[in-house]
Image (cartoon, rainbow, N blue to C red; front, top):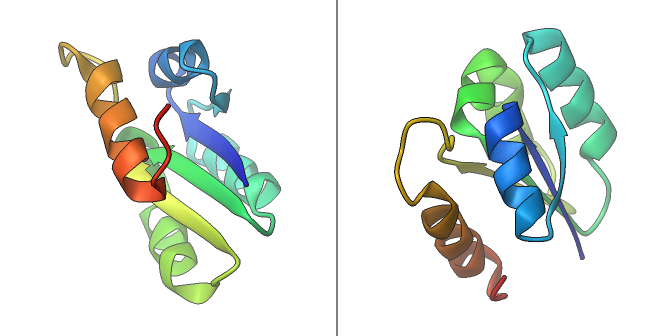
Amino acid sequence: MKILAIGDPFTVQALRLMGIAGVAVTTPEEAARALDEALAPSTVVLVAESVARMVREKVDALKIARQDFIVLEIPSGQGVPHQAEDTARLVSQAIGVKI
């Protein structure tokens, strides 16, 4: 199983510190392209909520359209204390693996 994060630069950097690969995006076009490139069988794609808002329709469609990968929204890390710990807990609960 592969885990990949797509989010704002701060969130992606925080997840990289936890060992999760990521793509930092700042525009809807970058977000859509990153999602298209991330989708592969047995992949868990973590999408920061700030990015998910940019491409809401695409994220919602991906959540229900295919069964060979998982798209999860996670809280964006900007401005929230202890966000990295909360994100790690959410990811662990979602995929059943402690990170």
